[in-house]
Structures are given as structure tokens and as C-alpha cells.
Image 1 (cartoon, rainbow, N blue to C red):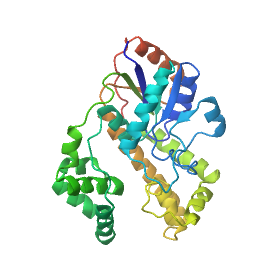
Image 2: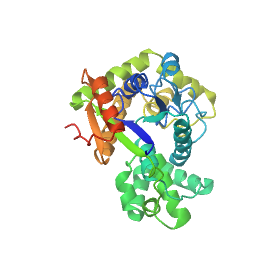
Image 3: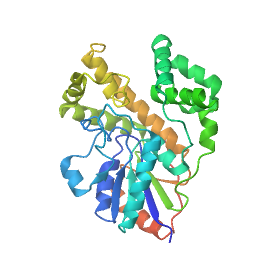
Length: 320
């Protein structure tokens, strides 16, 4: 039989981690984290990283694997995830990939193009141009060279704008063209993808606001201040660009007041959730569940059992 994989997706604050942990108690799952912030050591509060007790109950792969000064690409995630998937299957268990970094899921599912390695000279030139004109200017520049990539990339997503332009400069081809030639690494697996989200977007916004306050109460500011005081990190590092961390960094730099920072974090997190839901709506064969359903665990468990026997069709997404 084709080896199974399960993807658990959803917007931020939907409750993916608690559900995944509960599922490991019912099925022979091993969790692979699909989160571009949880990979960093010392970035716990803002990433909603599982605590020590949770990780003891349900260990997560690809958590705390890098220092915040280091970079990690979607291509590196793909390599690491494929290695882990093979190893988990070799142990007779089932990989459960959980997270909200949609680009990682997409690259793993659809493959990745043979892209050039980062070139410091081009990166520095792009960063200097951004400092002079701003990232929206560079986004408009990308739109003239690779309209499809510009349509996918948010106008303020500095990291992805930079990479797309860099690829154009290095190869003479667009990122979109190269990605369309990508291989599909999961062709030999049975992939079962499901997502959770509240039916009402107002409920999701309330969950985001509540979680933000909990993070701040638990010491998120102090966590970021430790990173800020290190001296080797700047606002240009991918780790610092993460939602929430970027806004708190600006507060520590004196660019925002405390209340302005809180409002900025809340707005950025809501925007992230909106982008995640947009990605998910275009995901093929995705089964949706209401994250607020009191019987969520039982309902999802029933679907997983049916999926393992290949008897369940995909359902419709929730209305937002």
C-alpha cells in the first residue's frame, strides 16, 4: 500500500498544536513542525511553541534546530522533511505535518525548482535599494519582471521579494518559470490534507487577541529583548522579520510606543491569518473542520481512520 502522510493546516491561533498532540494519543503519528519561527531557539512565546510538557508527551521534529542569526529556506525544509518522512515510515509510524507556514507545505507537496544559491552581492544591492526606495517599490519592480510571483507575494514581504528578484538577476529567468518546472517529491505517498478554522472570522480574531495577551503576560517582551541585546541580530534577519517579533523589535528600538506596538502586532497577526486562509482556499482536495466544534477530536479521528482506508472524499471549506 502507498505510505500515508497527513497534513494538518490552518490559520494562526486556530488550535492546530493541541489537536495534533491529541491525535498522537490515538494514532501512530510523529509530528513534523511546519513553522518558520519554531525552528529558532529562544523564540518560544511569539511562535506559540509547545512547552516542555507537551513536547515530552508528543515530540516535534524541526523545532529549535537553528540560532536566530541563521537562515533557513523552503528548500532546506523540503530536504529535512523528506528525510524525516522516510525515517518515520521506516519506524512503522505515520508522519503528521503540522503548522501554518504555507510556503513550506506548498514546496513539499508541489516540489521546488532548481534555484540558485543566495548571492551576497545581489542581496546587498537589493537591500540597499529597499533602504532607499522601500519594499513596495521593489515589489512593483518585481511585477514588471515576474507578474505571477508579484501577485503571490505580499507587497511588504521583504524576504520573498528579495529572493524572487535575486533569482531573476542570477538566472535570467523568472522564479515562476523555474518553479513550474519543479518535480513532485510526494508522488509516491498518499497525502491526506485537512485544515481547521473557526466558521466565523470574528471568532478567529478574538482567539488571536486572546493569545497575544497571553504571550505578553508570559514574557514575550523579555524574550525579544534578549535577542535585541545580543548585538548580532538586526531587523533584516529572517527570524526578526517574523510577525510579532518585527513589531516588538521596533518598540525596543524606540520607534513605537507600547500601545502602538500591541496594535501593530495584532494587525499583522490578523493579516497573516487572512493570507493563510487565502492560501488554503486554493489548496486542492483539502478537508475542512470547524475548530470550534466540541467534538472536533472525535470527528477528525473518524476522518483519519476513514482516510487510512481510502473511503473519505474531501469536504467543503468553511464560509468566512
